[in-house]
Image 1 (cartoon, rainbow, N blue to C red):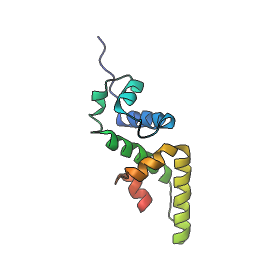
Image 2 (image 1 turned 135 degrees about the vertical axis):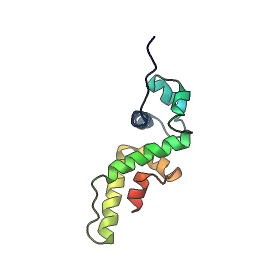
Image 3 (image 1 turned 180 degrees about the vertical axis):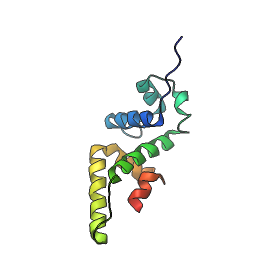
Length: 116
């Protein structure tokens, strides 16, 4: 008998982001995510305690990617404009995550990068 596949946190977040392309945050569920991954929903609770924590992690990961390589150049207006453009681009590719970040804002790495 083969052992169960162990999903990494990154794989779970990638799959959750893909799932959010086709549904909104309200209909997003652990059961749906587990079904896409082909696993039991209880196994996902080892990575995240609840839906909110999972949604925050997905949004934060997108924000971290959006801020990757950002260097604060110019005056404060130029820095704010550059940051806003990065966020607009990221949320344009992942529109469901804009609402998630607004509702479930986190103190994760991506959120901190945006605020700094």
